[in-house]
Image (tube, rainbow, N blue to C red; front, side, top):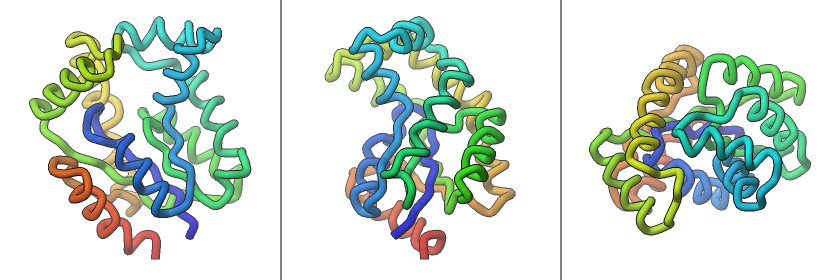
Length: 192
């Protein structure tokens, strides 16, 4: 089955978990910009050091770096039959860039999923994740800043994707299996 999806939602909404589960079910790669940046940070690469300067302050990595990374990743063979983008696009300029990347590849998105969750729930989840995983990019200040950036820049994209008839909203609160079932049911019409 081909499936070209974007999964959106504020940090802590469960995008990574659900993207991985959907990718397994659909047989397509889950492409997380956050995972790629963290791997580069851990590996001490030039990109990693640059990315860490931004993420440690709760800021996003510049569009130019992110766009190039996504362009290269979507051109790889395993993404030819589909993909799930997690963490991209984050703003209107990236939406335009993604449209251009997909047009150059001769394809388009099937759906954009938004996982929804209340801010207090997200803050609690992210504090817990910081303790469990020891992530230095999950300080209180960084978490709050990323949630603010999402509200300012990314949340409005759902309106644009809704106007295109691509948006599917799913409640991101509950047991992981329940959320996966909701996602699968909500996406069924878009994926045929």
